[in-house]
Image (tube, rainbow, N blue to C red; front, top):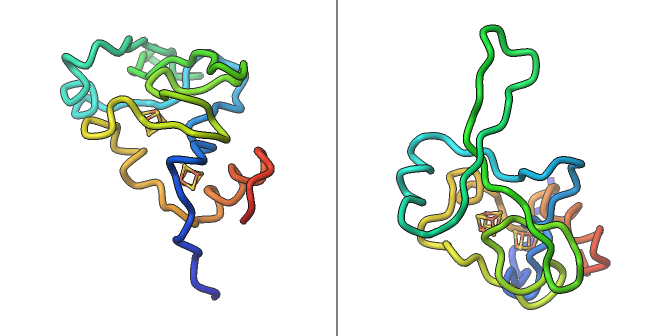
Length: 117
Ligand code: SF4
Ligand code: SF4
């Protein structure tokens, strides 16, 4: 397998912080994430787990519109597909910590914004 490219500049990309789902939530959180994000001022919402029996709700970060009108994570500063920064980078959720620069998901996200892969 070819090596994953790792020279992408996340601060001029932010493609993975844009939401392509139809809902108004993006990053799902666990309780460690919630504790870590406490005090950042970010809104945390609860979403229903589909088909859960008994009903279950899990915490998540909501979305917002960036200055270009793209639906993005509420924590993103700047624009997806352009100059950006995560406003809670030191406290970012676990799923954001494990997202690999240069992975197939990363490349797919970049392609959606017409960024080179
Ligand atoms: S899509 Fe890839 S290059 Fe772009 S911000 Fe996310 S991890 Fe970085
Ligand atoms: S928390 Fe930060 S790194 Fe994670 S999706 Fe939101 S803006 Fe991106």
